[in-house]
Image (cartoon, rainbow over all chains, first blue to last red; front, side, top):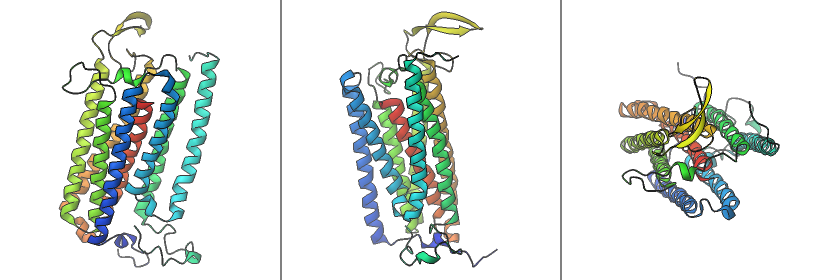
Length: 121
Length: 241
């Protein structure tokens, strides 16, 4: 059944060949960034694995780089950066808030029961 | 990518008759699905983090577990293989986004090529994971002496590799979480490949020309990028940190 009260957003999503060239260039740039970050991570892990002095520094570096990679994937590959700011906020803010809270609780609780030496079961 | 963002009247935005987010219903819903799926993976990874910190004295380091590379025999090369897997998945993500881009230009031929390459990348990743699992399950020839339960009794014996009951490399929970989380992710990759194949067939049959847009490619693309996104986190927390 045809309905004329629904605005067909899907048909709006289009661009010309010239615009496509610019977009493709950006996509490949993001690919090279992601690849470089991954190679850097593997290289760091390869060189410094098992060195106790670098352990914390490595961990925070890896987590930071992971968030950078995730940002590029969500914003560029998943086009969230091109959507309305309302949509961006409604997706990202509750999610990030909830996960930050969950991580804080899980890790601090785990460290606590490790410290007191409680055995499961 | 919405081109009519500029002409929106902010006052009537929520008045009905128009999507407040200026996207189609299907795209909004796949975003909501991805959020709930992301929460599932976050829950799994958080519980992994919990157990890892709780048992940090017996937790194995991935650098001692995943050290093999195809055709290199027993050479000790940590991280290299999983780095290759990550590369394959990132590459297939790029081919996917290029298929979406070609869809915006309504270029059927290019969409087909990029989608097909994405499917190939997905299969490569899946078979890489099978290889990784096989090595983890078989373990080393020397094995390690562990206390395990056999027929309800604790016995001390040599174990090789890992499964849900014992783990040569360290805490049993490491294997449990590894199998569950990478397995769950692998299942997502598998279903992503299946969905991509379905969409590719639809594109080849000309369904998208009939509806006048390639939004289905964009929606399955969102799912595929999400799978890549999850792998970025799995890669960090299982292999790097």
